[in-house]
Structures are given as structure tokens and as C-alpha cells.
Length: 323
Image 1 (cartoon, rainbow, N blue to C red):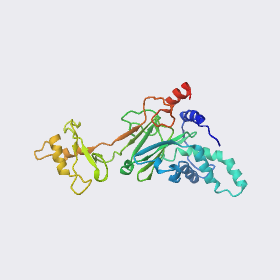
Image 2 (cartoon, rainbow, N blue to C red):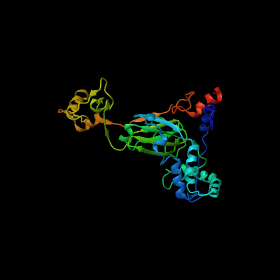
Image 3 (tube, rainbow, N blue to C red):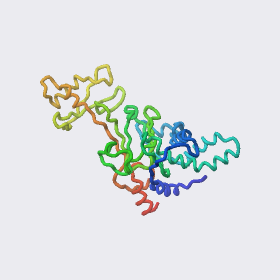
Image 4 (tube, rainbow, N blue to C red):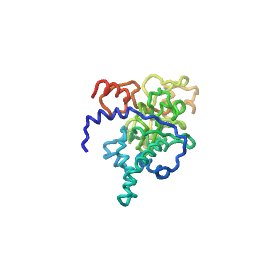
């Protein structure tokens, strides 16, 4: 089938900007046109569970180290995937005819159950027409270093202090995660129920973390640390402190020499150097958050960019100016 690129660029953002409403279902998720167990398996298949990675990323150069790639899911492709899985059980033309007649009802049930795959036990079920699915693939050391990486998506800008406590997942501005899974030690796949405006990636907040600002790799790694004021916890002016490593042990910090360097810059209440609490104060690192998206409406002429509000772009570029 021949596809006109200009038509796709003109119609795709208009379709993605119209998000269907999500209703709350009260009935249980029992058997329907297909058994509940089979329906759950098909929903997972629809969310690319079990699909070979080579079908998602055709070449490793498309996902180089320390990169993130944004995309949307073509439902025609996932519908064909589900139809192919169901067609395995057909034997003759009568079976295929019966499957073709039942598939609209099967698809409607999959649309309803798609949003409920990650819902918490005992919570209300979601229903309604299925909307667009977008997502990203992240290949980074952050994925392997923090397996419990937090991912939050919003249809409106929540501000710098947004987290699970202030914006729960069932709030209107918060978008649901349909899938969040590590496909490899350093590769993370995430699927959203809709097209987000802002996405937050944040290190987990469990426990206490110590760290430095490192550059280079292997034997050429170099680390620095910005000293903090012991009373205000603000960073002190001046150049950062070079972090010393032990001789013959690459990557192992010489904590005694580092303590002496920090004492000269940060000072100490003790005569013999930094005590344990003052030392921890200098080394502690708060969880970092990476924000993707531009809260301000920024019209652009390129459709596949995750840093734009689709609604603002559609209104100004496609409906006002034209393509």
C-alpha cells in the first residue's frame, strides 16, 4: 500500500491530540468474548511483551549508549500481531470466518483491559476507548545503576516539586504507565497511555547516596566534589575539590586524603578534622531528576519531537498556519 508522507504528517498529530475520555468501570474483569487469562496474555502482547528486541530496534546504532528514543505505537501493527496470534488456532475457512466476525468484540475487550494491566489490586478498573500509545527506549548506565528508576508522565506541567505524593497516578494531569520494564541491564522500555507533555525520570529515593561528579571512563576517570557550607548546606564558591584515588586501585577513593582536602575548604567544628556527620554532609547526593518536555507552548514544524505540547503545536501549526 502506498503511503503519502505529507498526508501522514498532516493527519497524525490531529489524531494524537484528540485523547478519548477514560471511564471508571465497576464490573469485574471476568470472561468475555475470550477467557480472561487469554485476554491478559493478548494485552501483554499488544504492549510488545515477548516481541523480539530486533523488531523494536532494527539496528543497535539506532539506540547508542547514553541515548533516549521517543516513539508512538502504530496500533495497526499491534492489531496485526494480535490477529496473527489468534489465527494460530484456526484450521479451516470456517474458523477464520468466525474469528473475523468476533474480532471487533475481542479488540473492544483488549481496549478496556489495556489500561488495567498495571492497576493495583482492589482499585477501580479503567474503561473506555483506547487512545494513542507513546513511549521511549532509554539506554544508559542510569538504568543499570538504578533498577528502580522512577518514571512519571504528565499531560500538563506539574511544576518542579511533582512526585507521587503530590500528583497521584489517578489524578487527571498524571498519565498512566502501561508498561515499564528493563529489556536489558542498561535498556529501559516505557509505554504511556497517551502522548505526554512532560516526562520526569528520577533516581530512586530509598536510602542514602554518596557520590561525585565524574568524567572519563576506565583508567582515565576523574572525579570532583563541590564542598558545602556546614551550616547552610549551600555550595561554597570556588573551584571544586579533586577527588583522590588510591594508588593501584582505579575507582577506589582515598577517603583520608579527601577528608583533609575538604577540611581545608569546608572547615570543621572538630580540631582533628571532619567528624563522621560533617563528612557525610559533604558527600551526600540527592536524587537527580531529568525532565523531558517544554512546559511553554512552542510551535514547531516537526511532529516527532517529545519536547512539544501536541495540543499547542496542532492548534498553531496545523489548524492555523497549515502544513
